[in-house]
Length: 479
Image (cartoon, rainbow, N blue to C red; front, side, top):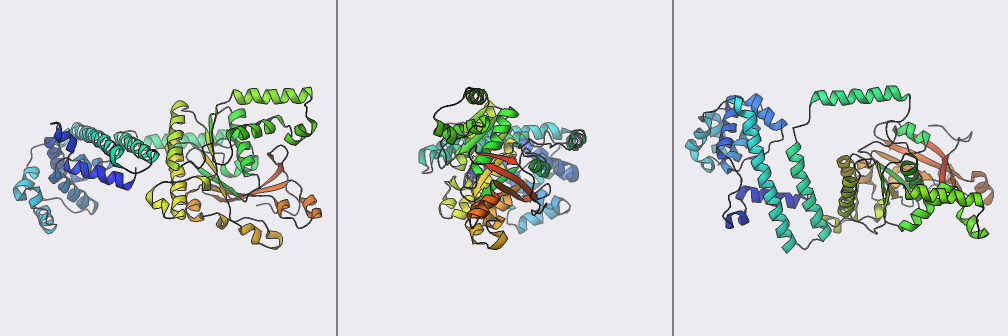
């Protein structure tokens, strides 16, 4: 939900819905329950206010403006460990010039002297929460209607704002209901038991590259992995190798967005890599052997039977990508992985993003990280590097660094892991050096939030568009 959208919702919540008043309907509210809860806070602030905070209560829960003001003061005094008594609260209200806004001393004492008991907290809180959620639904629907009539924003942005607003209501409804220390301890112990029983195997999804899985402990839910490279390094092939393994070997649903390449080309690449057949060889020969045909047919059957979803929308916006990912998750609750090729080809259509490319990239990378957490799936996104690697001399020529990421600040911050992919032969100064380096490739794990960094040694078979692990040369440092 954008800040402007939330501000409008808050404004409507404070003043009441125009359309609701015009139709003669009264906004859902429970003034007596509001007064009762505030009175409970006076009786036992430590327990009652702490419970309200842990359940996610905000000022919006109160429909009566005077009650909102008192909640704000009670919450502030609780945070500062200041007593909540009639005399000091009246003085604070007077200092804030808000005493008259709550009805003067009489209005304040109406709350302080209200007859109630803290034993009613649970039922009264649930009633207040229900009224708040009903108001939020009404206000969100009204705002969506108003925006559909008057907003000049792109329709995808309006859909995303409305969808996020509805999801925010759902999150509010669930907040405080499921959390418990016991549950978290149980889940933490389950993770420890999994590590003990795994005997070194990755806890997340395997990427098909053992050394990489060892460093990152597999592709885990909620994590954002950025793989960056200069053009022609094979980053799309690397991502497709991971997609192939998860979709065809592990048989997990996979969603891949390709901003650069049509889906039919992705399918062709997957078929060549899966069947281990060279596209160039088939083109030169103009035919296939019986064995090759069987391998190719088997690859087609595997791909057709997989749960791989490809989306080749060019210049897809972060709002559209989020919406599509949510719909796929609804159809495939066991979605295992999302791949994106590539970050700098995505767009954000907010007003702030239109004025700054750096701001646009920040919104995209932040949106992808939020989506990974929301859907609880790993997201691997490719990114382009600037010309920094070409400017380096000596043995470091071509070696990428995190600072080579275009508009790198937000990407470095949001990513859980960053891998820098390069092939030394591409920067060779002569044919002899190029022949010596051959198909060697390297993935430098430059950032790993929850594990070690390191170097993953690979070979790239360009004719098959396939990366495979390799043993490091004697002169290559093991990290």
